[in-house]
Length: 110
Length: 112
Image (tube, rainbow over all chains, first blue to last red; front, side):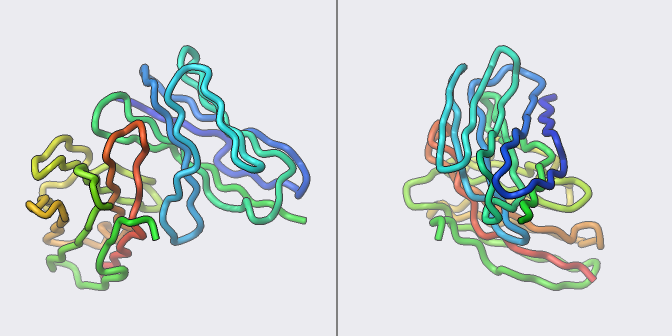
């Protein structure tokens, strides 16, 4: 059974600092997705990573995928308050099930 | 607006009752997925339909059922509701996994 783990679960960081969220998954997959969720809201797609070594950047967020290590990272550069949200990674393992990680709740403070 | 429409947005009902949640996928998307999000279980995959046929099943209780209609909208039926069924229920649609999955705004179900 595919398991997807994220760490940390909670992250409180100061504005302007950098940090990385890690996503590990248990079986081979070439597709990994990152989503953002604000409290009580829907899931907003951030990145779709489709191959080993894939790197995508949008604003202060950069995501990468290492399929051999079964690891994806979401790097936050110079955090701002607007980035406060819960971030999920998800893997679909070439089946029709998208399995989500536990989520990382990010809080950025002044 | 993501293009995936879910109704109703909020639902409050009593234990033992039955409810139906509705989802209209983005135009052109043939696949519909249902997810349950609760504080203790996180985001759990329930079931997937592709062009009217069930394609994959996850942790869906026997009290729950779903279907996808010829116009591609989908309904999730929850019966004999229990307090523990209180959660956010999301629908997502996809045309092809490489393009990602688009989520609706969800239905918040409260069972009292």
